[in-house]
Length: 392
Image (cartoon, rainbow, N blue to C red; front, side, top):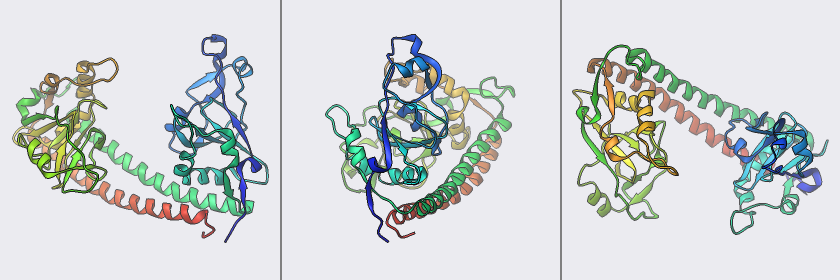
């Protein structure tokens, strides 16, 4: 089915934002929601109902910002381009937006929201500028969008909303399992800060067979797949080491830098910088090369399990040590001596094994959920493509 193409400026009012003078205290800390791109970067769902900073009515009057009615579509036009949300209350924005106020009866806000998200890459390519890219109001108004009848727009938006809700529920279930493990850790071993159960405390080198730093591991990255994966700090998040979204090195690099120790399954990795304190367990038999600013901890099986060590790193006790020992005014990092001298509460190994069995069971459930989520993501991508090509 072919729908007519219309320019966004024909079916919406395109509204730019602005910032009151920052040096005038009378313009700030009022009750007028003032949205910036940063507000959109943190939302999970499409609706936004608040802002981190607020301005006064005097501040609004003394700049070119304009209040946007609820059910407008907020679109960040720079730094970065392409963040989208629908406001559930009247708001104004800073100059990083070109927002859309839909014309009644012409375009449905939720339909426009999904169209903008689906075409984010295309919209980003419209950015102009040497210092940072920005999409101008003139360019935004000229963007063409397929426009089915309003009833069809609502049907398409409802289908995409429902499919996205399924993905959100699956992600929420995964998050609940993570919370369950954290609660189980506290129930079994107590508060890692106060150590109410009186467990022994050891230095990390006393309970690990190997503590290896990856300080000078700069290496040429190849633009094609090899058997040797590079793990960077960005691959270590929330207890997981991502071995899929990786870069690659050649074998001679892998062999050269892994002479000290070849990373293997069960090793716990910790980021020293960018960011500080993310940890994960290396799983699987992939041949990996560790990039810079990563510490490797190989547990002594008689003293500590990888699962316990991981959750200790992610717990409040070690996070406080990270904060206390971190240095650097611009970019925080953990010095090597600190990474070799962390103090860790160490319960009896049989209790740690019991916890490890729980972790293994939960991880199996999470693996099934991740597989289902991947299927939902594939379905959602298909629906998005079909939705705006008249194929739903």
